[in-house]
Image (cartoon, rainbow, N blue to C red; front, side):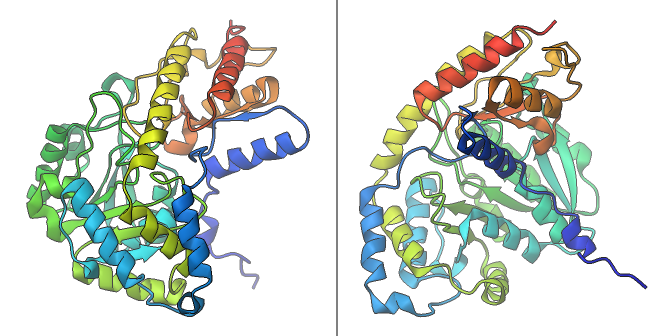
Length: 401
C-alpha cells in the first residue's frame, strides 16, 4: 500500500498568494526587468532608530541569550496591556496576553484554540489570504459573507444573519480591512458586536491596522464598543504595520484567561518564546509615542488619494475609496473577456498575469481574497513608483476592446 508523502491536512494549504506575487516580482527584478510591485503589504519605511537601538542593546544583555517565558516577556505583556488601554480603551491584564511570532501565529493559535472540527466561522469576503488556511488547519468550516464595491466592502448584520447556523461559533471581524481598506464606523462596529453577543458567538477581531485610518474614518475596537463581549472576544494585533516592523515577527493575542492559557500551552510546544531581541524591540515600540506612525500615515494618505484617482480614471475600473490600511481594491470585472494584445483574459488572475508580463507591474488578483474580478494594490511604496506603476497599467488597459 502506497501512502501519500504529504498529509492531507498540509496538502490542502494554499501558498500565500501575496507572498508568491511578491517573490515573482522580485525574481523578475533580479533578472533585470524593471518590475514595480504592488503585492506585499509592507511599509516602505525603515524601522525607527530608537527601536533598532533597543534591539542592539538586547543583543548585549545575557538575560536575552536564554529561554524566557513562552507567553512573552512580562514587561512586554504589561506594555501591550498599557498600549491597548491607551489606543482602544480596552483594559486587560498582562495574563490575558500571549506574545506570538508575528500576527500570523496569533491568527493560527486563536482558531486552533477556539475551534473543534465542524465549527463554522463567519468570514467577510474579500478576506486576507491567511484566515482560510488557519481556520482549515483547526478543522473549522469557513462561511463567506460576500461584500462588493457597492457597499464599500462593508457587511451588514442582515448579511451575517443569513449565514448563521447552529454550527456557527466564531465571527471574524476585521476593521480596517486587508485587502479592501474598508473601515466600519463606531455605530456599525457596535451594531455587529451586539448582534454577535445576542447570538452567543465568539468574536476574533484583527486590529493590526488600527492606526492606519484616513479622512473622517475612525477606528473602533469591537471589544470596547460592546464591553459585554469581553469574555468572548479575542483581539489580534502586532507591531508590523504600525512601526514598519514586518521582518521582526512580533504579534500578540489578547483574550479571556482560559483561552490565552490554552494558546500559550500550544505555543510552548510549537515555538517556545518569540526571539528575545525582537521582543525587546517591540517593547520599545509599544512603550513609545505614535509619532513614527503619524509620519507614515501622512505619506500613505497622500499615496492613497493618488492611487484611487488614477485607478478610477481607467475605463472599466471601479475603485471605492479605502479609508484604512494601505490597500486599494478596484473591480476590474468590466475588463474581463476583452482583448488586450491578442489575449482575452477571462479572470482577474489571467489579467494580473498579463499585466505582469506586458506592463511589468505585479498586483494580486481577487481570487486570492475570495472574490474574483478584483485586484489588490498596496500603496505602501514610493510615490514615484506608485505613479509609474499605475500609469503602466493605465496604458496597457487602455488597449482593451
